[in-house]
Image 1 (tube, rainbow, N blue to C red):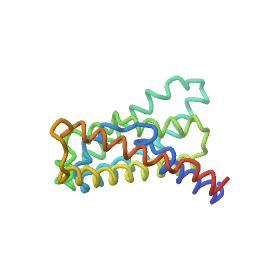
Image 2 (image 1 turned 60 degrees about the horizontal axis):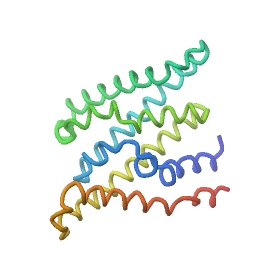
Image 3 (image 1 turned 135 degrees about the vertical axis):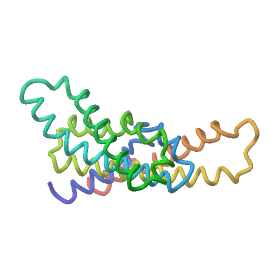
Image 4 (image 1 turned 120 degrees about the vertical axis):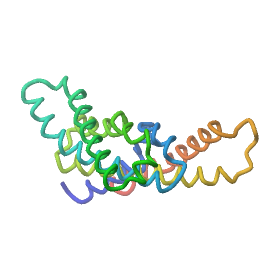
Length: 197
């Protein structure tokens, strides 16, 4: 694992293959918790934690499943591991950071079904990354989720003070802003290849 490969994986996960803005995974918390920067930040930190821990836990389990030709159980096992980890995060937040727990509300348990978390774990398996590269990719994907959430929280805070036509207020304006934010990340395609290619 060389430094250029690590930076390439991180930049790719953050910019050119961002799970939210390019792969459209994890849209539920992206649209639901991005109204305020502090809740977007809290959700993102929780997702990064779950991504890293789920990658660390599922990697050896996947190796064991493949060793016994049980690779078809991969998705089910990953979902169970992620669900258990989210319960752990929920218990910790409820006990130690009650305000964030209350602010995240229903979206905290939705990390269990957040396809970005499952997607990063399965993508690591599909790319045959080593354990170290799997952790790097998961960190990059989590940071990419954080970047998308914070950018969109800023955009949504501006939308609240904008003069929007009556027919576009609410969800239509939010979806238009989300699509424009997503399109802005197309400008990064080719950047990673240009730097490390």
